[in-house]
Length: 294
View 1: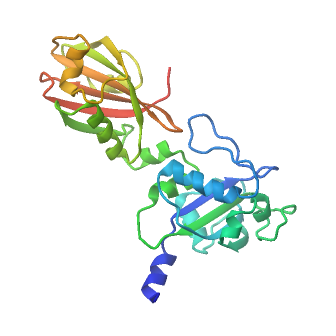
View 2: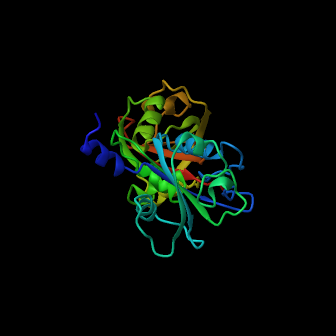
View 3: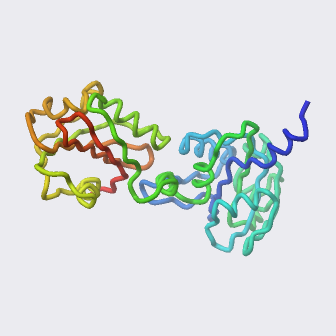
């Protein structure tokens, strides 16, 4: 039996609210390369395909569709709080709700154009909405801030950055026995996303500890004065320990050693991870961030 507590809990958990900018053909505007949003050509089943794509991008199930709101945002990009307020039936300044459509499998199987007039009626010729907001809920109480952040129009990377301070995605202390595969796993655990690679690992050597600005420069793919690149290995063995990469790359000794790993994050591009050791490879401090290329 469904209790009042269950009903209340379900009603207050908004798991996804996705704004779809509508053009004359009712397709989202195409984002720049490397961003999380992609164009969906309108067709029967486009709403369901869009939600499925959001699941793939965020790695979070979107739950059951509760309702679809056709809204006129006045050309503004809404925040996550504004999306949640609209999904809860509240008013948002400057936003006009054209219509509200109860969620169902049939709605997921129709077209964006059909929903743009605020009604599920098989007709999309008179749409007045500038955006469609899809709100769904779950009964298990999981945390959905990443999905909600993407729903507000940001890329997944921007959302990951907003959950941390500064522009470094993570800084981790790893033991020298940590393998290449273990370094990848540590990155994935720290950020909640899966990456491919590493494609390459570069080894750098120097006589002193690089400064914070120099580490940021390395993460930007730049060279620094205090360290020089001495070796590059493509597709390094996942079983190699951090302490052994330099020797396996032909580098015998250096006071300061650094390795730069190149990972790929689906849809988002290249990630550079820099690991530095000053104690002979016993311990490593690793940092990473998105790299936009030269």
